[in-house]
Length: 134
Image 1 (tube, rainbow, N blue to C red):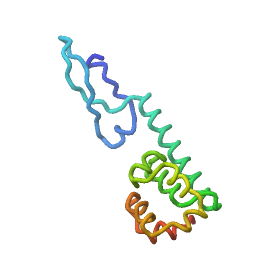
Image 2 (image 1 turned 180 degrees about the vertical axis):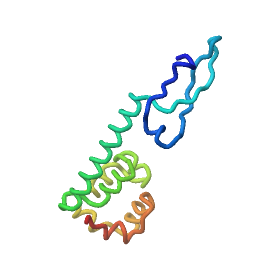
Image 3 (image 1 turned 90 degrees about the horizontal axis):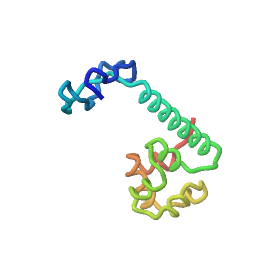
Image 4 (image 1 turned 90 degrees about the vertical axis):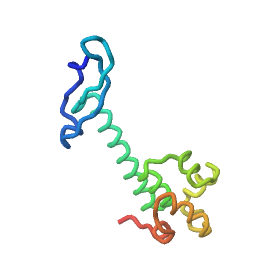
């Protein structure tokens, strides 16, 4: 895209007076940089993604509240992780982490296992174990 065609739509960046650096071509066809205050399609895509993430967090919260899932599910969603990422951070097998999603299994976890989750979520073991949805 040409430098003068870099989008300047209203978006998340324009509200904060920030600009995004983009690559464009100048009059001679050479690549250069230009600042953009936003691009409507990108703003829509980001808004949709954030809305979906918030829905997943809300769902996880209600599952914990209703005794369907352990707090691990809620904190995983809150920290924008999935099973693969969480398993990697805790250095446990995916099947084992998934098993810990069950409230009955979670309630019997050893302190050392809870510590891995607590460290991953930047919490104390007590905060993780005693998490309650208000």
